[in-house]
Amino acid sequence: MFKDYLNKAQELVDRGEPFVIALVVGYEAPISGKPGYRAIVTQDGNIWGWIAGGCSQSIIVEESLEVMKTGKPRLIKITPDMENDNPNHRQMSCHSGGTLEVYLEPVVPKPHIIIMGISATASSLCRLSKAMEYQVTALGPASDKFMPEADSCMDSFDVPGLSATENTFVVVVTQGEGDEVALEAALKINAPYCAFVASKKKAQAVFRYLQKKNFTKEQIKSVKAPAGLDIKATRPEEIALSILAEVVMAIRQRDIKLQDTGSSSSETAVDPICGMNVKIDGAKHTSSYKDDTYYFCCAGCKMAFETDPEKHLSAKGA
Image (cartoon, rainbow, N blue to C red):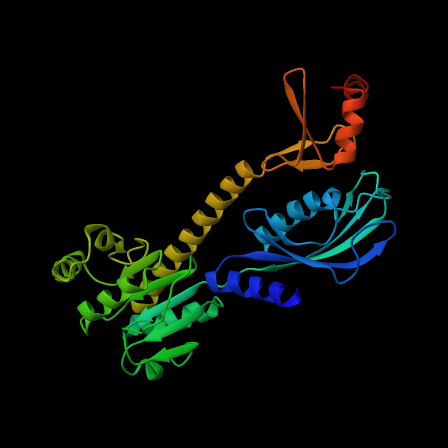
């Protein structure tokens, strides 16, 4: 089982997807979770593994998505007795009782910058990328001499097996030295971001070459040229800065899109018996009453509700 857990984590890392490791570090009986139990919470709000019953899982998912967003670990305590206003304490009002302490550790992949070509701009882009703690791969003849700060260097532009994730950003900075060959190799990586440091006129000439190489209009259109945000950059350091600014903007726009998608797919309802938040999508325990649907964290809450719906709805002020 632990091997399966490690394989799942490695699978997510290889795909460049963020996730959270939820680890039980403390408990007070009676509760099903025990120290050492662990699970993985993915960016779509799903849990892989098991650490506690349904009453705690919705809280763990909610907190994990927040940890994923901030990138900062958190120790949360899920308890039926709220003694203070500690923001890391969450109330569990299910019948099982007990207390659970869970450490949430985010695993957020670093952006991977693939730099093709040797030039002053390429060297500046490598240094700035490493200053931002990004992963850098430098491709091209003598790239190790021009970009010694890079995590890895390869003499060829066309590297078999070099795959892209959603955190991969390819920048062609050949500036007249093998532009066509480098951009052809860059498109084969199939990264979500591919930029070409060149004037519009130069880019159009290279694009005509790519058309003859049977690249589709969509593939060619995906190349950002000139590369970077338009900040009127002229010096190599300024061009590198404009490219990284565009990379940051792309990352933030993607994060916002994921948050919007997550919020719509992770809509919750309040269990009218215990007060827990229950994820509506894929809820296992539901009940219909007077044309309304109610959601429950477990079969016990559902059964309690169905014995006398009016009583429980009145008690909740519904």
